[in-house]
Image 1 (cartoon, rainbow, N blue to C red):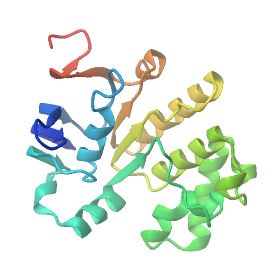
Image 2 (image 1 turned 90 degrees about the vertical axis):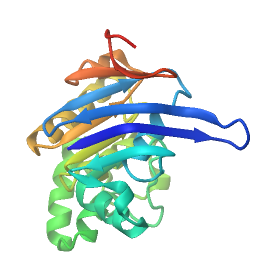
Image 3 (image 1 turned 90 degrees about the horizontal axis):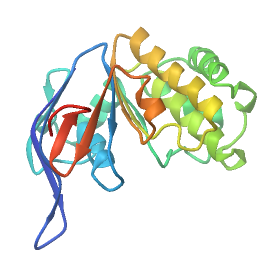
Length: 225
């Protein structure tokens, strides 16, 4: 489902600061893994590179056999729409759309009818405990409610690859466990793959295995750097 080979990314001008250094990584369909690491080590950058939102300086990223370098901006956008679900730290909800409209957006873009999109989306909002908020706008939501809408939007079209960047950072522990279980079950039931970026050991324990990202690279937790 996902293969990274020698992926390197740096930022800055002269004396560029390396963020990702020769990352090799593979993720098969059906696998759900966690990536942990200190703040600023490049976890969000790694997700952005995988999603084609950022371009590596060197190396290759292949999603479902497709080399992202072979696609232009429109092609990468189409690939994200059809293959990926992304939970951003900043949420990126559209302020002029209601909760159900925001969450249903991937389905509507894919050509799903309004009635069918609403039906599928409301069922997911109910599972996340926010169905009563369906007609509200983002400005009327708490941080935790906004986060759950963003998660619903990422999962509603049953993507093959889910990228979740600290998806429970604004949730209380009980709600976080419910959301994490739903995230895991949605990925598994769709036969897809998922990457969870988290600082939480409890959240990471709900995945198949955990990796640690450091300045020295990406390695299996407990394994050699």
